[in-house]
Length: 209
Image (cartoon, rainbow, N blue to C red; front, side, top):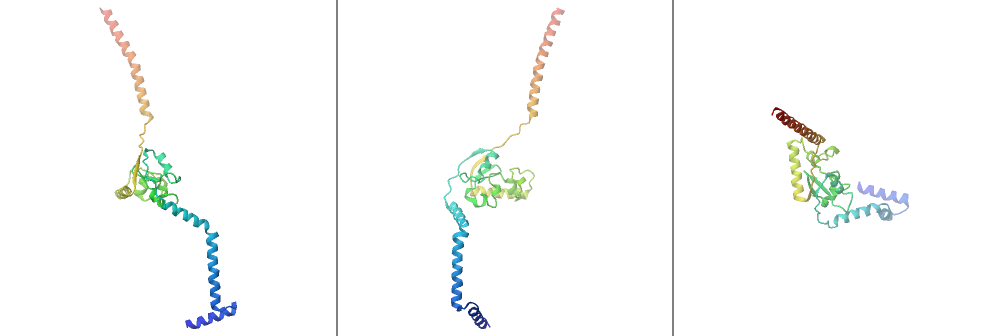
């Protein structure tokens, strides 16, 4: 059966193209090779160069981690990978780690790129990619979520270098200052009254004498 199909195919090739089967398949192979070369040089050249450049960047030795010390969450946003000259940083539970060696995951275009430049403790604990979870606030999390966050922290501690901490902000309400000023004012107003009362008492004593 297979031999009959092959004989029929050879006859059809000869009838429609005027070429022998060997010549026909040789021409097809040459056309395919030409197409592959042309598309590689022109159609896919940009993509090829981009991939080569990305590969070269990954192969370049990373600079040693730089300690940033205590910085604010706003300052941490500068290290989200948008500037290739700056290290790629990420925080867990207020501790900042240099994740530059995993730029393919946390850098621009990576699956976890939205975590870079932030304290993503809540998002990691919940395995969430929601904007409202990209915060270091872990209040209200359940035991399973806290365990998951602990696993992430152990992973970062063992794999990446800690380079700083997030500066904690202490909220100061205006009411406290207002009360303090009011108290100060009250104390200041009371002093003349006390002095006046003392003078009146002295005057009364002198009168009695």
